[in-house]
Amino acid sequence: MHNRTNQALRISRVCAAYAGRIVLHEVTAEIPAGRVTAVVGPNGSGKTTLLSVLAGVITPTAGTIEHAGTRRPALAVQQAGVPPTLPITVRETVAMGRWAERGPWRRLTRADKAIVNHCLERMNIADLAHRPLTALSGGQRQRALLAQALAQESDLLLLDEPATGLDADSQREIAAALHAAADSGVTVVHATHDREAALRAHHRLILRDGRLTESDEPTADQRLREGTRVP
Image 1 (cartoon, helix red, strand yellow):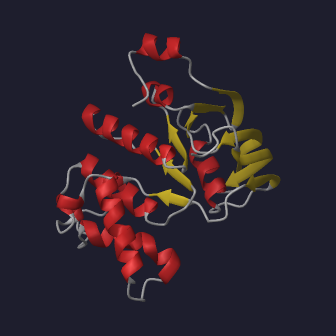
Image 2 (cartoon, rainbow, N blue to C red):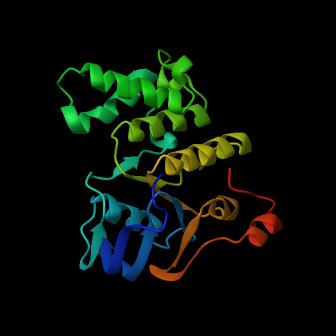
């Protein structure tokens, strides 16, 4: 069993810019390993920029990030960003997660295929493997994209508003999938502006105007008041 007291990430006085504008201002935080951390804040608070910095997509203009893991982070795509005419099956979608290891033009090995099958089963979509990705519901599509990210076998999973546009049942399914990933030892960091989603997380980073205003763990009383619980 993984040690939940370990820190997966240490962020120290990180500043970052996007489109020539400073978005993050000296953010300092620790993110616990093997837990679900919600990055909370209104639109424009810097959530997406922070995820992009953690993913290595944006280079900080100042500060440091220490990642205790040995693999590069896996960044899950939003289901709303899937082109409506993309001619790809669910299995092919998940298999793309192995490209980081194999490259897009090399055949998958038997081990790669076993990882893809495991991730399909893990997200409860093995029965949808041969269906077109675009024929799925929003919740099913998001689970396929989560499976793709998990297929990278990273120890850090990053997601930007994974439940946006989904119905309540699908939101709960995604929350349960994130907690299952954390239970298996993966550190999960997801951005959200939804209070209920934030309270489902083990840990929260609260951003406003690019500054960290609070870092905490939701209490049982808070969850009860909101009528939510950790899946």
